Length: 133
Image 1 (cartoon, one colour):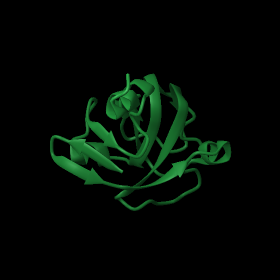
Image 2 (cartoon, helix red, strand yellow; image 1 turned 90 degrees about the horizontal axis):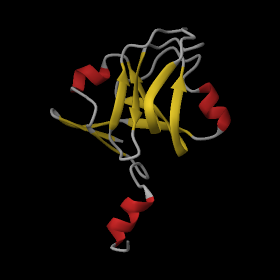
Image 3 (cartoon, one colour; image 1 turned 180 degrees about the vertical axis):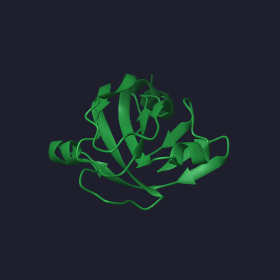
């Protein structure tokens, strides 16, 4: 995965949470995560997403990703173990979790591009890329 910001391109190794069980567990119970790693939750179809930090030891930055493959919203420095609901603030195709402070470190902001296979590939975009409208 690559996050394209005003400071350049930043690469991360991400685990994909795509089964209901993986999505429910997320990063719960983990005590650490390498700085250049994260977890992505894909939503098909895209939807308003909600997350929480129950049983999560690691403070995280949650990056909500729009259907266009751009950063919709960032919830920085989430509180470990909190059951407060964190809302995407709009329709999200995915949620990316990185270590807390990582979004600020790379200068990530809403509108920045997220490069990951399948993200931002709405039917209209696919038709545009293939030349068939």
